[in-house]
Amino acid sequence: MSIVTSGPAVSSRALGVLLDSWRASSSPGYAALADRIRLLVLDGRLSVGTRLPSERDLATHLGVSRTTVAAAYAALRDAGHVTSLRGSGSVVRLPDQAKVRSTRPAAEGDVLDFTKAAMPAVGGIAEAAQRAAGRLGAYLSEPGYDTVGRPVLREAIAARYRARGLETSADQIVVTLGAQHAIALLARVLVGRGDRAVVETPGYPHAFEALRAAGARLAPVSVTVDEGWDESALLQTLRRTSPPVAYLMPDFHNPTGATMPEAQRVRVLEAAADEGTIVIADETMAELVVGGPRGASFPGAGAGAGAGAGAGTSAGAAVLAAARPLPMAAYGPAVTIGSVGKSLWGGLRIGWIRAERPLVERLVRARSAGDLGTPVLEQLIVADLLGDMDGVLEARSRQLRHGRDRLVAGLRSAFPGWSVPSPAGGLTTWVGLGAPVSSQLVLAARRHGLLLAAGPMFGVDGAFERFLRVPYSYPDDETDRALAALAAAWDGIDGVQAPRGALMAEVV
Image (cartoon, rainbow, N blue to C red; front, side, top):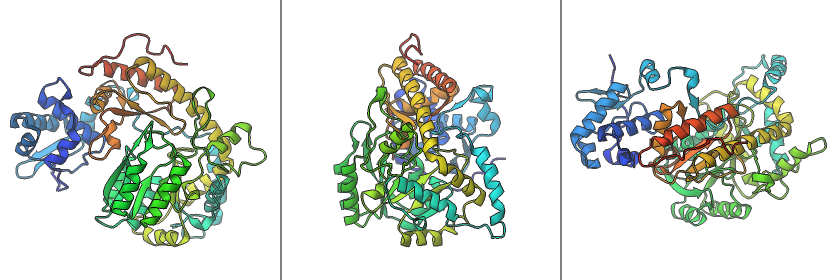
C-alpha cells in the first residue's frame, strides 16, 4: 500500500507558471496536462512529496473544467507519478520500476541520457589510482576525517590558479565533495533565510536549489547567447537589493556558453563590493576551451592568462592556456568554485573553493554539520592527475571541438529553422527552437529513447520554453542517434514539422 507523506505544497498559481504552454499540444486537454506535470516530476521541477493543488483550485486557475484536471490526475496516478488519498490530496511520487520501464524503449541500452553535460573518464585514471593507493599508507595512522583537504591537493589546486595568472596559496583552498557541495556549503554559510541572492537566468538549476535550501529568495538577471549578461539589470539588482551573494558562471556559462568580458567583470565586482555582496564565481567550465569555428580566435582571453605554461608544454596546450580567461578573482574580490567533474571524470567527487583565509576558516567550522570531509584516496588521485593538467585539457579540447562541430552541423542540417550556436567553450549549445515547445519536444524525445533537459529547467519559474540545451560531449555514434531521435520527435510535434531529407548530410 502506498503511503502519502506530508511535504511542501505547490499553489495553483505556482504550478500554472511551471506548466506555461501546456495547451500547445493537440492531444486531449487532460492528456496534455498530465504529460506536462509528469515532465515536471521527471526533471525535478516538482520534487517528490510535493502536494498538488486540489482539482477545483487548479481547474479554476487554468480556466478548464474540473473534469479535465480530474482526468489528468487519474492518468498520473495510473502512471505512478501521483498518489492520492482522501483527506491528503494528490502527492508527487516516483513510479515503480515496472512502470518506468513501460514508458521507455524495451532495451535499456536503447535509452540515451543527454540530460548530463559530461564526458567519459580521461585516460590514466586507473593508473593514477594505483599510484595513489601506493601512497595511501602514509595517511592511515590519521583519523581520515578531512574537512579542509590534503596539503598535497590544496597546493596542486593553488598551482593551477597561479598557472592561470592568479596568485594563490594552499591555505586559500577548501577541498569539497564536488562543485555542488561547494555551492551548498557557501550558501549555508553566507545566506540567511529571506536574503536575496542574485542568479543568472538561464542558469545552473542545482545552484538555484542550493540557494533556496539555504533560505534565499532568488533575484534573476538575464544572460543570452548573443548579448551575454544584461549588465544594466545586474548592476541595478545589486544596488537595489544589496544581496549577500551573487552566483555567476562567467566562463563558458551553462547553458548559453557566454563568457563575460574583462571590463564587465571589473564593473560587476566593483558594484558588488560597494554593496557588500560576495560574488561566487562558478568556474567549473573555465578551462574547457573549444575555440571558434574554422580556426576563429578564442574569445575572452585575459592578459597574462596561462602565465604558468612553461617549458615542455606543447604548442596546442600553450594556445589553450593563453585562451583561458583569468579567474574572476583576478579582477576584484570574488570567491571561486572549481572541480574536476567536467575535466577529468564525474566519478571523482572532488571540488574546491578558493577564498580569503577568514572565509576559509568559517567554511571549515561550518562544514561538519553537513559532512565530515573528502575521501583521502580520491584527493591523492586528483593531486596526481593535476600534474599533467595541460595535456589533459589539450586532449579534452580536441574531443569537444570535434563533438561540437558534429552536433552543430547535424542540428543545422536537420532543423534549419532552429538557432544553433557554436560555443567557444563548455559542453553544451543552447538551441533556440523558434516556438515554445521545449517541454513538448522533450516528452516526445523520451518516446524515441532520448532523455533531454527541457529549457525551463534552467530558468526561475518556468521560462525558456523556446530553448533546449543539447550537450556535445558524447561519442559520435550516440550523437548521431540523438540527432535521429530528435528528428523523429520534432516530426511529431503539433504544428511544426522537421524538414525531410538526409539528416547527416553536413556532418563531418
